Length: 255
Length: 247
Image (cartoon, rainbow over all chains, first blue to last red):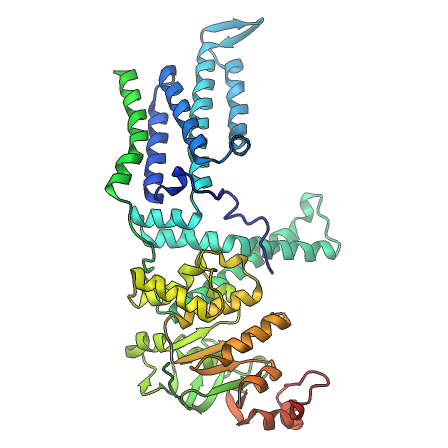
C-alpha cells in the first residue's frame, strides 16, 4: 500500500531555504503570472527586452538554488514545441534568407524565435514556482488570492488522490499481466477499457466515502480556512519589483 | 476528559431500493467511559448501525441519544463534534494534502483558528504518538501511522464517544499492538467494530454480537468468546489455537 516512491505530487518540489523559497505563495503566483504575461505580450522583434527578461529569469533561477542541471533537465518539457518551431522557417512563405544554401523564411525565423523565447521564459517561471513552493502552500496561495474555495478543494483532492489512483491502476494492471494479458493490438483493448471503467466506479465510491468522512467531522459545505498568515505589503512590494522591471523594459522598448 | 453514554432503542433501517431491513430493531445501551466491541459477520448491519451514531445515515425509525442529546437533524452539529468516527480505510479519512490540515479540518469546521488551531494539532498528534508528522503527506505514511493520524483527526474535535470501524484491518503486528496501546489509553466511550476477536478480548470487557440487523448477544467478552456454538452460529471464529480462557 505504501507509495513513498515516485509521488506525482511532491516530485517537483526541491527542498531548500532560498530567498525564492521564502516568498509567500500568493505573491509568488502573482509575480510569476505577471512576468509571463509581460513576456507574452512583448513584440517578437524587441530582442533587447527579451535579453533582459532572460537574464533576469536566470538570476532568479540562480537565487532559487535549484541547480543548473536540474533546471535544464526540467526545461526539456518545451522540446516538443521547439521541434515544431524549427520546422516553421523551412515551410514559411515570404521573403527568403539564404543560409548555407538553404532558403529560410525570414518570417518563419521570427516565428521560431518568438515561440522559443516565450516558451523558455514561461517554462522557467513554472519551474521556479513548482520547485520552490510545496503544493500545499500553492493551494493556500490560491485561497488567499480569493480563488473560490470549492475550486481549490477540488484541486487539493485531485492532488491527494492521484497517487492512490495510480496505485490502484498499477494493481489492476499487474493482476491482468499476472493472468497472461499482453496487449499488442487494438482488438485487445477491452480489458483496459473495462479497468478504466472499474477505476471510475471505485473513485466515485471513494468520493462518497470521503464526503461522509468530511460530514462526520462537521463539514457543512464550506472548506474551513486553515492557511496561516498573509503576505505583508513590504513583501508584495519587494517581490513585485521583478515583474515591474520587466514591464518597464517593455515600455521602454515599445514606446 | 469527557465521555458520554450511548442509548440506542429499536433502530430500524432499510437502504433505498432494498427489500430487506439492514437493521431490524437494534437496541444497545453503553455507559459513559465503557469500551464495547461490536462483533458480527459481514453484512450483519454493524457499519449501518455505527453510521447512525453521528447522523451519517438519517434515522428511519427508533431513537438514539448520546449523553442526553438525541441524534436528530437539529443537533447534528453538536452530535458530530461529540461522536468521532474513524473509518475503515484511512485513505478516506485523510483527504487533505498534509497531516496538519487533516487534523485541523474538524476543529476548523467548529470555528477554531490561528495559533489555537496550530497548538491543538500539535497536541493531538503528540497524543497519538505522531509528533513531527504534521507536514507530511498522508499518502506517504505507513498503515499504522495512517491509522493513528486518522484517530488524531477526530480526537482534535475533543469527542466524548469514539467509533472505530475495523481499526486493526491491514496493520502489521507491531502496528496493531501500538494501536491497541493507544486505544487503551483513551478515556472516551468507545465502540469498536471488528472481526478481530483477540482485539475485542484484549480491549473490551464487554462485547455485543450483531447479526441480522440486531443485537443477538451481549455480555462479557471472555464469556461470549468461550461459547463456540454462539460464535459458529454467527460466522465468527477465533484464530487457530487461540484460547480465550488463557489470556
